[in-house]
Length: 85
Image (spheres, rainbow, N blue to C red):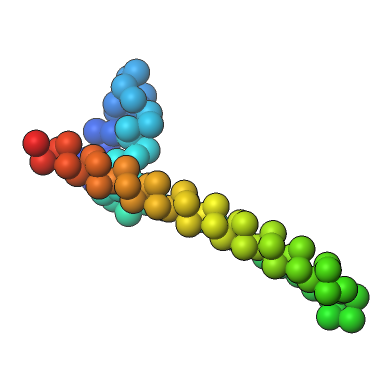
């Protein structure tokens, strides 16, 4: 709780907001929620090409979410190394 409070104070007194957000994500387990919802009435309304486009769009969204998570993880490791020095 003290870390979150300190980072809040840093963010609100002109410190680095990005550092505060990063710290909470990396150390306090805060995560952004990613919801992907696909609604379909019936399979009869879709062509093979339409289904392929839907699969590609979902795959791209998943890849983007995984890339963001990997970047957050890499930043967390970098910060841990810097703090360990």
